[in-house]
Length: 123
Image (cartoon, rainbow, N blue to C red; front, side):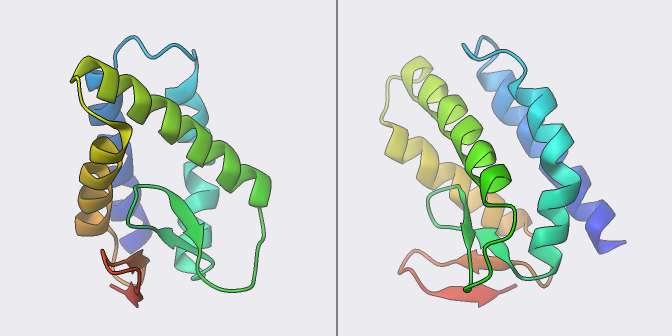
C-alpha cells in the first residue's frame, strides 16, 4: 500500500513539474519517468536510493544497482528543472531546492531523504 501511495504522489509530482514545463525540449520525458517509476520505487523501498537535498536520486549506501537508470532519471529531472528555471527566470539551483523540499515532504515512510545539512534520514 505504501508503494502505491508513493507512486501516486510521484506521478502527481511528475505531472505537476511537466505541466509547468509543458514544452520541455526533450520529448518523452514524462513517459520515460513513468516507465522508470516501478524500479525507482523498489530501489527506495530497499533503501538503495533516496531523494537528495537537490531534487535528485542519490545512492544512500555502497550498493549501486541500476546506476544507469538512476543517472537517466536524474538527467531527465535536470532537463525539466532547467526548463522551469528558464520559464520562471530563476536559477536551476532554486528549482532543484524547491523540488527537493516537495519530494522530501511527499516521500513514503521508510524512504531515505537527505536533509538540507547533508545528513540522511529514513522518513
